[in-house]
Length: 243
Ligand code: 6PG
Picture 1 (tube, rainbow, N blue to C red):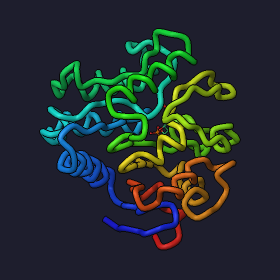
Picture 2: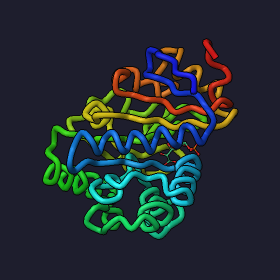
Picture 3: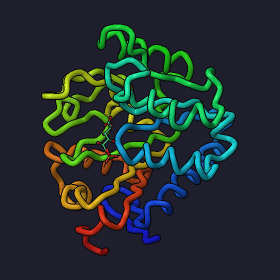
């Protein structure tokens, strides 16, 4: 695996399975640092492939199965049994097959209105972990347009320094989403961004080597570069300098 040190974090570039293995190692490392630790998963096709790999090959470390509290870094306002629910997919494809207990599951409350959902999630998080703490291990993806979590191009969340870790946001053409804020990201102990596929290569170059978070929001991770790890397959990395 190739390792690149960049202004936007450390990049691990390799075949998809090597990246997945690194993701499982990050879970193990987080479990060594703290007895109870939080892992936020995310949505998209790459996490689904990761869940399948992890369950089929029994790759998730014991600490994560038994001691982690599991949630997602962003969520859609749909019931958990909807195929669009990020937590629902993680639960069906990873947590339930692993035998993770209900008390370890920390989904966003999607059964109330969206503003209440964000407020309730902030409150539950603060009660359980303290308002000044973020996820121990936060997984993110990057969309074709450079968005990460539910921070999309031109998003008010790029300018707004929220006090709170989590919020709701109305995304044009997609509707309301729930998401970790930049403040919430700044409080995470470690951030891991999985990016796969050739269709991401040009945008990834803009995110990693450019300087335009308004247009390519994932660039905000450069603020936390020392804690951000990019897990990138060779196709997605193909437009980067140094590859
Ligand atoms: C979501 C995710 C989103 C995702 C990217 C990457 O809820 O859809 O938060 O940001 O991570 O779109 O998705 P892929 O894994 O499909 O590339």
